[in-house]
Length: 464
Image (cartoon, rainbow, N blue to C red; front, side, top):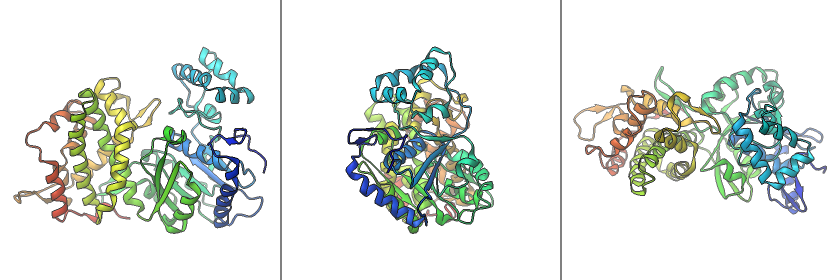
């Protein structure tokens, strides 16, 4: 095999830390997947990432690190919109990152790409996000250089012949982009396989309230059957995964694709399990973003008080458990994945960061949901979606005291408070502490008991 220009090797080590002795097993996994796609010699397996945020870029880079060596068998590329400029402060910081990493510095010099970063730091040149991504720098994650990537800025060129499309877009952009992608798939006889990384949801209130997930958006926008659409998620921080911190994820969807893809994606530091319950796992990935924002607020307002954060954790997890009982007939199966994803997001995720910065006054709501250096904060739209869904009178449940019927959201005071802060803007971030200190708030245990004892499951909310 010829070595890839995109793969940097040093002795017996590749950029992803795998030794050459593992090439046989990697090539075997690649050959198995190629066989499943009906690939013949000279026809490479084409994988394209759509969207170049932190996780989408890292996901493509991990594949490039592992399989980019086999250039005649696989092609990996990533699409991002052109024209996004890198501001001067980021260019200066990027230059510092480059010079702090000898391996990165040597790579750029060898590729004759170093000078433009000098010019960018001095303000003599404007750098662009697609340009630096080609050199291995994601705009939302400049502190963690990745391997160089094949970057395409024309969406049609990126997807028209793709065998696998990785959706790295936020849920708020998924429908629009995949509606455009559908135009380029009309002449195809065989649909591509889609792996969605998006952790967000949208609400649909008519004709009846229900959750719409990114995989469902893709299905509606393109006509690609759900059998060909999968979701991959887990308790993951993109930069840590690329730095080979041990992590795991689940790929969910039809058995035909999820099992071979789980094997193909699995690495020594990134364990991928498979599961058939696609939509429910996808929704859980969006739900934890809601409460992560509040966790960041509590951390900032209490000076990182462990006691206050534990009180918040008790209340937010009880609300999440209550909501899972509304959405799933067997919610116990979701407890582990949901809590693990919630834990890491509360610790270090961008949604918790967003809540913390809001409470400190370092950013404000007028700046929108897309924050420089972080990307889209999907928890904001998820707050709106879950609140509006659970406010619908057609979903009413019996009040715990048996006196009246109430909307499910009435039993979710944290969700209500976040809606007032982020969407209505009626109260300040301090409102989250006031909600925790409300003497009328029920014991979190009672909310869980309500969910377990009463028939609160509403199958119409989550049509699979």
